[in-house]
Amino acid sequence: MSDKLIVVSSDCHAGLHIADYKPYVESKYHDIMDTAVPVQIEITDKAEQSFLIKEINDAWREPIKKQLTGAWDYDERIAMLEQDGIAAEVIFPDGITEMNTPPFGAGLGLSPRNAVPELQWAGAMAHNRWLAEFCANDPAR
Image (cartoon, rainbow, N blue to C red; front, side, top):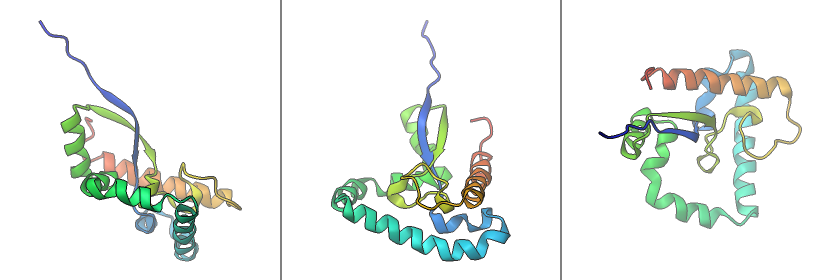
C-alpha cells in the first residue's frame, strides 16, 4: 500500500507583461495606462541597473527563458506543474524580472511612490480578471 500525497505550491507568481493588461483594465483608465506603462517600465529598468542586478538577472534568465513564459502562458505553466508533480497552486501577482506586474503599482514589487489608490485598485482588478480567465483553462486544478 502506498500513501498518496497532494502537493500544493503556496508561493507561485503569474501575470501578463504590464502593457498586455490593457484589455483587463476598465476603459476609463486606458489613457492613463498608455501614459503610465512606459514610465513604469523605464523606472523598473533603471532600478534594475541601479541595484547592479541586471547582469545577474540576465544570466539567471538565459537558461530558463521558456519556463519564464509560464507566468502568462497557461500550457507552459501546466507542463511545469505536471513535471514537478504539483496538483494546485496559490498564485500571487508579479514576476518582476519579466516586467509582468499589474499596472499602476498594484503588484507585490517595490512600493510605488505617489501611488493613487484608485489606480492601484484598477490595476489589482485587472490582474484578478486576467487571473480568473487564466485559471478557467482548467477549473478542476
